[in-house]
Amino acid sequence: MNTGQMMLAAGALVLLGTTVITVDRMFGNQGTILRQTEIGVYAISLGTSILEEAQGMNFDEVTVNNAITSTSSLTAASSLGPESGETTTPASSTKFDDFDDYNNLTEGLQVAGVDSFTVKISVYYVNDSAPDTKVTTPTWYKRMDLKITSTAMTDTVKMSYIFSYFNFR
Amino acid sequence: MGSTTLLDIIGSFFIGGILLIMGMRLNAESNENTAVYNGNYILQMNITTLISLLETDFRRIGYCRDWTKIPDPSQAVRIADTSRLRYWTDVNNAGHLDSITYYVGPPSELSSTPNPYDRYLYRQVNTNTALQMNLGVTQFNFIFKDALDDTIHFPITNPANVYYMQLTVQVQSAVPYAQEYMNDPSQYDVFWKELRLVTKNLKNR
Image (cartoon, rainbow over the protein chains, first blue to last red):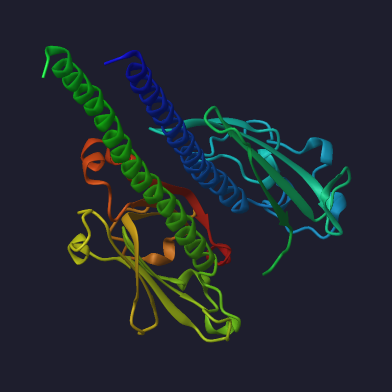
């Protein structure tokens, strides 16, 4: 084998090696993306669970036992959050009894075999005419924003829900 | 043929062999990865579609446009079992009570797929023929809770006690890539665990 043939053989090896590495990298990226979307599915599942749980609560602490007719009776915007002694872990049973108890809640949740997630929740009053804008006076509408992050996700999953007070019976 | 020529031929066969093996491995890995990733992609689509359907349906448990048809929402759930749920609702918002039943069939019904664990998910409206869904469901389990958030143990003789539901759904590829499936079946799973499904009508009592 002369030098020219050696060069050709070496060039072929380098070319094929580069192709293999490029293809491997491409599949690696695809796998990462799929894994991240799968973790996103888990994150949405967790977020939905918390939203569903919160929807099962009363609108406000004062509506736990009584029906009210004026927003002035509601908890002040600055006092939204759990009352004294109320704690929760969304993944288990809860002592929370109203929707705004979740305000400022930061919870770490571990899904076995998947990843650990951090859920941050804020609850605030909004007006029906501008449901994205926080207001500082009590209204019949409370909005919950959830942010779910994990070390494996590059994006933050954000979910929102607006809970309104209505006495339907 | 001199010894140099012979050495050249052997050398070129050796290098050619290495190239051939590299090419074949590349081809095999491409096929495998494509199969695995496509399967996972389809699974993710399946589970999001399924959960979307279930959430829409379950939120309407006990709902009827004509509320006098079901004045007592506690009667909305008719059968509550580990993987079977039957309830009253109003499917087309027509003011008529409809019965919906969700249940899974045995794995033997889907023996035609390579995955031995997948099964049909059925959705039956009234007495119509049940809609058969092959979405790779391998697990479809309910846990029911009462008003005090305590788990109701099976068999549930009085479904009126059901206040909350917890749903766990697992889907797996119906046609997994055989070799990888043996090595690591977890990569073909997608889980959805909904810790609490709240149906407002069930609380309206």
